[in-house]
Amino acid sequence: MRNVTLQVPSGEWLASSWRQETSRLLVHLPAVPPLRDRIAVQVRFADLPARATVVGTAVSVQKTSPGCRVEIAPAVESMRAVHMLCAVARGEQVSFRSRAVRYLVSLPAIVSWNGGRLLTSAFSVSEQGCGLRWPGHPPSIGAALSLRLGAGRQAHEFRAVVCWSEPGGTAKVGLRLFTLESVRLAWRRFLAEVERSGAAAG
Image 1: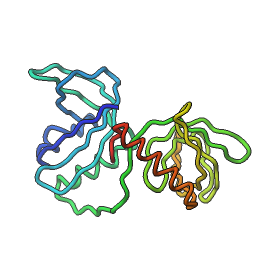
Image 2 (image 1 turned 135 degrees about the vertical axis):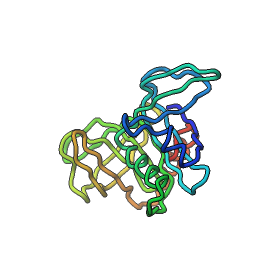
Image 3 (image 1 turned 180 degrees about the horizontal axis):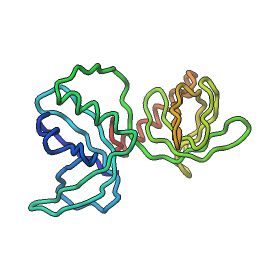
Image 4 (image 1 turned 120 degrees about the vertical axis):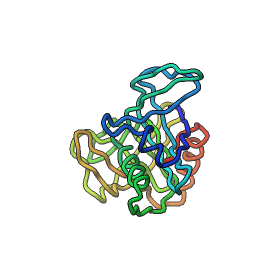
């Protein structure tokens, strides 16, 4: 995933960076990315205390001098961040909740649950746990399961409990790690690896 930073005045965000009519984000990059490339844009307002990470896919590229202009289609899970940024830029009252750093990832995951195994992927990880895509009906809140994140020698195994779920075509579930100290230590080492990999912080 390509990580970039976009620092603009809030008025410029509304006027040119975010295209409401097409739901596209426009950014200028020094090098031309491949189409369909995944890009994490860390948006910061120059005149207001607001920032958020928008992850999406490059859907068009126009060469400029220098660099290029890239049109990004945000992922569904990033639209909440987009709406928050738009609300702040319009001067609306927005409540900010303090939370631990969340890294935006795309990691293979194997979940052992209810006597079976599910192959899926994680879209975010944080100090407390992770978010998974869940094809089919999600498990109940409070359900305990085993989780294997990553592939090959880089894979890690954990025990966790479902703390939230979001239905949809492909549902999403949030997992909170068991509080055993051994699990926490292993998870902190895993997060350090994710941070060193350059994953975007949302």
